Amino acid sequence: MSRGFPLFRTTSPVAEAERAAILGAPGFGRFFTDHMATATWTPADGWHDRKVGPLEPFSMHPSAAVLHYAQEIFEGLKAYRHADGTVWLFRPEVNARRFARSARRLALPELPEEDFLTSVEELVRADAPWVPDSANEGSLYVRPFMFASEVFLGVRPAERVVYSVIASPAGPYFAGGLSGVTLWISSEYTRSGRGGTGAAKCGGNYAASLAAQIEAKQHGCDQVMFLDDTGGDGSLEESGTMNLCLVTSAGELVTPQLGTILEGVTRDTILTLATDFGLTPVERSITLAELRAGAADGTITEAFAAGTAAVVTPIVGFKGEGYEFTIGSGAPGEQTTALRERVLDIQYGRAQDKHGWLRQV
Ligand code: COI
Image 1 (tube, rainbow, N blue to C red):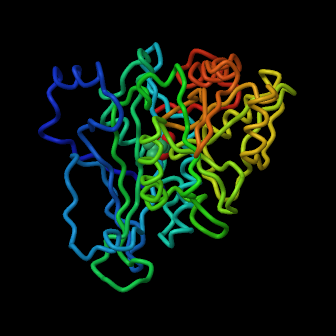
Image 2: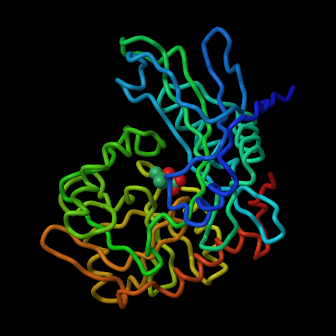
């Protein structure tokens, strides 16, 4: 039986003129649409109280488990407006499956894929006027999340959990990102270890990345690039909010293998598209020494970061304690630019969707 998220429309939506002004320059993550989806889980009733209602604050007891033990997960995906006005999601089933995997790792109840997809679609439908057009890479960033709301201070999986979806009109994640970003390779902080939560999309991973992000900014970099936890030279893992991809002079598109990194949807999209550009996709460990040597002798020709928010963002240089280097000429690479265009063209309906990645809302 299909279970919907019935819509209770807000009586006080943002005025049309104000919404138009926001959509003209949304930035990232600063403005929110009129509605939100919610559902609640308890062991006795499973998932229930599904609805899309007005956007409003949560009321939570100060002992709610998420506030103390960070039992929380989230997803990020975008809705795109095509030239004919229709609105489409990009590979939402992949986000639904990753959300279920993250839930298992954080001992949260799994949300059925159908509920994930329905809640996202119903919310985007209710707030369709908030989906920007493709000018300035506009999209509606959709943020499903789940947290432990049980009133209890003992440490065990919570027995009351809230699922919700909110949405935020978005422009590019990095202002000026098209000209390329520089990443700080932290020798102090790591993001994950074997058996940890590195592959889960949980708030705790992002909280733990913030001190490293401050360190990156202090060194004049846009983001941090994490190494694995083996110390010393280490292997490259991922950036604070994005996966890493390298292009080599041998025609490979190399990205760190899965395990302790996030299984990015854009990462997978790039690996699938690579062959269209004459690149062989390779998932393997890449050491910092290899990156430095490859940048110096020209065998690593391009670097970029891939993520839903960041799409494909050229990486023009790296810095670490006592060293810095550029990739190629220090400008965005040709393959990077071509891959970025192809991903955006598919998302905005300008290129054929050969893989069936788009889903109309
Ligand atoms: C995304 O790209 O969707 C992310 O989750 C990055 C984000 C934390 C802004």
